[in-house]
Length: 112
Length: 112
Image (cartoon, rainbow over all chains, first blue to last red; front, top):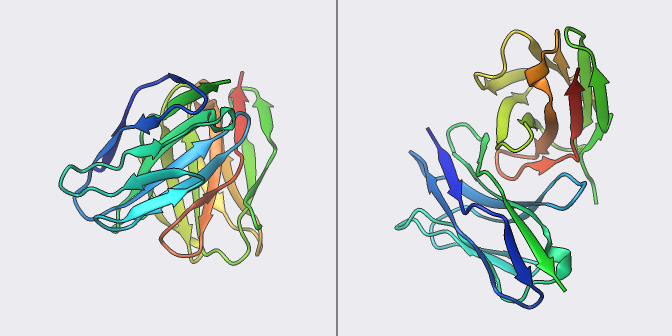
């Protein structure tokens, strides 16, 4: 079945550091790929998405590129802020069934 | 901006009791979902619902679980006889089409 593997955390960074969270996937079809973020005490919020190969999703300074050849969708941000402290989830949605399959989540803490 | 809402935010119940978790999806959305996240584990798909019927369900969604859209705005998840292992955060999500799902803030269910 479909699955997502993402980098284990926790990740602790200083403000203005570069963030990357690796995500790879296994799917039988051509999935859509998502990053969701969960801030402390809140629900899951869509951060960005990409629906086909070579698409780049971007939002709030975060970017991820859909790489079909490496089955990856790594999340990057060039300069993190304390407010980026959250849990980040990589997810995929296969065209055949629409349910989301999530990675385990990566906890990111940014220190001032 | 429209959002998915869920009530209650925290539900405590005794083992064997019935619970109903409530969700109000975004008003023009047609697809509805329930997911759960046991503490420290992945977010897992439970069920999807479209056109007043279940379109897909996971192995977790056994006879103890049911979903209903009792009126034009609410979407509920019922657990008939709760077990200790049902303790988790339950997320409702909705989508306009089969693409991006928007999540509510979750209901934390604690079974004692």
